[in-house]
Image 1 (cartoon, one colour):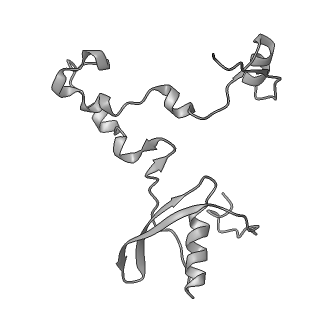
Image 2 (cartoon, one colour):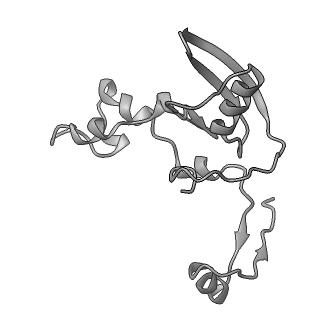
Length: 145
């Protein structure tokens, strides 16, 4: 919010993971980069740092997040794909005709979003406390055998 308002904020240096930077296009003073990085990497800061190391400024004009965890932009379903569905088109994956299941092939189970997360259990009281945004005691999950 402060940066958008033009207020400069002092940034403490911190370690981030940048796996790769690929220059996809250079057009005059502009460059299109593909960056593969770890969570917590601020690409606007990375652009400013890259520009400074090259001896001139650097900023982000456009940013497209192509992947987050197991989710890839290529698998995304646009709003128009969902809303332009014919009224007689299948609503469930199991109802899709053999040739008409392309959209459903991109749908991932909800568990995909939680892969790698620690499982915790809350009793009724703790669940209520947690639902109200407060810290709650958890019951350690028992590994399935």
